Length: 441
Image (cartoon, rainbow, N blue to C red; front, side, top):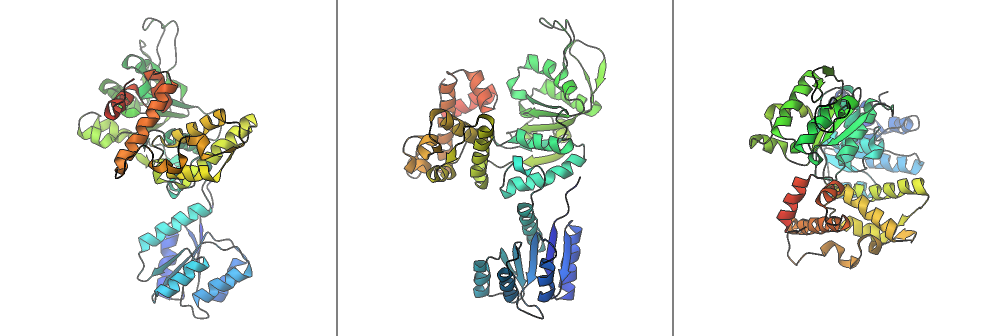
């Protein structure tokens, strides 16, 4: 069932401007009520909930500022207000913003900027289904708002972003939009974790006797995902030979098991993901162009955690709450820890955040987790540690990434494969990072 459209309250006495704005908001999918004076909107707020209000300052019966003040005094819950005027002054803008208005725009309006602001405010006011598993930043709310529309189509989806940002979580959220039945399969495969000799049998299955050790017929991931979703993570790690075979399967929606002869039809939703720049790889001849366009029907870009700080504390509390529900061990986050978490750049993104909290829960018996529990060392200078004065942001992030990989290597006893799996990257990618950062195993 589709969610009800976002509702907008428009207060504009100018016939031409009001009609133009109401029509455009309607075309964008909003339910817009257009009022031409202040008294009308006062009555409307008592009868209906609005997600956003757009209000002119110069109204025939009262000033927009006066109207806003009267509405606030009435005690009625108000949506975010965007004021528009053709006679803007700095003093008026400052007063309204101090009173609690969201924005103050002068005519002629930048209609595209206004619509974007309205859309983002609506998503924050009334998130679409699926958002609770993704985040509360505008970036993640926007992705969540797209999922219901993507679920209506059957095109392949490509999700990109740094390692650990939550690409699989977005894929699972889209899968749940398509079918909430938990029995509908969601099959995830890390292409970078499989060797060239194993990936074909893993994806397409094999028949008994196809190779040494094939003692029985076995279904591959395509067959296991039949009727549901197949998520191919780190698609860029796939060899040129496998790229050709994957392209053929996507085109024909049929697979042949290794060593078999019978073609088996499959009905899947394909979602691919990578932390690499596939377009650049196509230009360099390292990824097939025809496959790129097959999997790139819709593109979702997930920003790194450091670029969406609104999600940091929300995710941290969510992890702690989920663990508390599972084992009854409820933990809280001290204010010092919150400040340290917001100051830290999280080069390992959401995965690093989760591991950091998990480690703190294991090593500490305290109910309240402090910055010392999470990071150790001199937490007062956390945001500047492992850097020298004048270090660039790039140098600082490399320093954080080096420390995180070294800690992971120590935790896995120096075992490369286990470390790569823990970090969610391929062995090749881990070796490249180690070489770049000067890390020896």
